Image 1: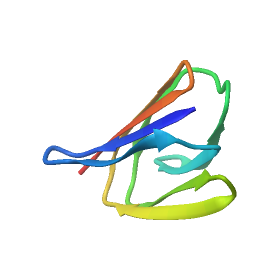
Image 2: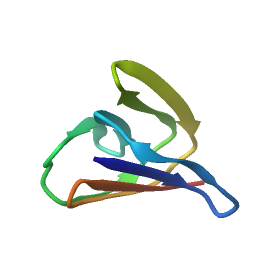
Image 3: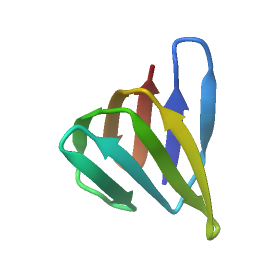
Image 4: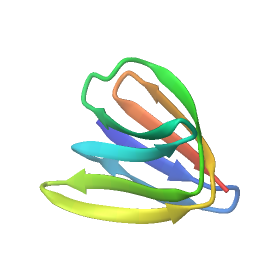
Length: 77
């Protein structure tokens, strides 16, 4: 599945991942391959994603996540 993390000024990350954990407004949630489509407001916290067993973290202040057809688009601010 593909993860895109973008802000108004740059593409922070774009690539294939195994899983993504996002800081949703109602609580943290994890997205795996073939997840149902959704849109969520994100709060301040960490976006954690795993690539080949290695976990990476990006701190965000908030944003919006869109999950559709194994593409996770995260717009951050």
